[in-house]
Image 1 (cartoon, protein in one colour):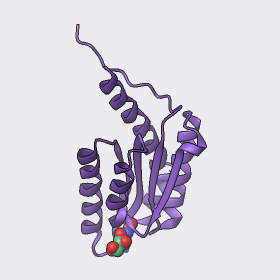
Image 2 (tube, helix red, strand yellow; image 1 turned 60 degrees about the vertical axis):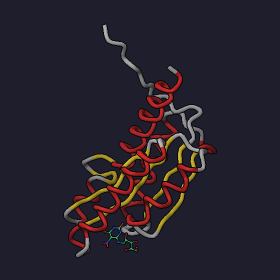
Image 3 (cartoon, helix red, strand yellow; image 1 turned 90 degrees about the horizontal axis):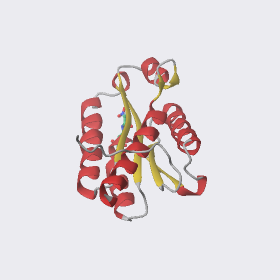
Length: 157
Ligand code: INI
C-alpha cells in the first residue's frame, strides 16, 4: 500500500507573505481581500500575514524572492492582473510574471503561488476577482496553505 503524504488545510501558525501589483488596482485589491479573508478563515493569524505592494506584475518575482529568502515565511502569494485589451506587451508582462514566480518557488523551496489573472478584457478580470467566476485571490490562499503544509509534512517525515 503506498504511503500518502497528507496536507492539512489548517493555516494556524503559518506565516504568509502576499505580494500584490498596483497596476489594475481595482482588480488586485479584490484579489487581496479574497486572499486575506481566506487565509484568516483558514486559521492564519492576522499578525502572521505581511502584504507588500509592487508597481506591476512584472515586479512580483523579485519582491517574492526577497521575501522568500528572508526565511520568515512558509508561503508567498503573488497577486496581479494582466489584461490583454489594456496592453500591447501583455505577453511579455504575463510571461515574465509566470516564469519568474515559478522560478522563485523552485530556487528558494518556499511555496510561491501564482495568483495573477491573465484575461482578454476587464469583464473577465472582474468575474474572477470576486464576481461570478469566484476569486482567484481566495484560490491562491488555499493553494498556499495546502502547499506549505505539504512541504512541512515532507520535511518532518
Ligand atoms: N502590469 C500589470 O500588472 N498588468 C498589466 O496589464 C500591465 N500592462 O497593461 O502593461 C502591467 N504593466 C506594468 C508592468 O507590470 C511593470 O510594472 C512596468 O513595465 C515597469 O517594469
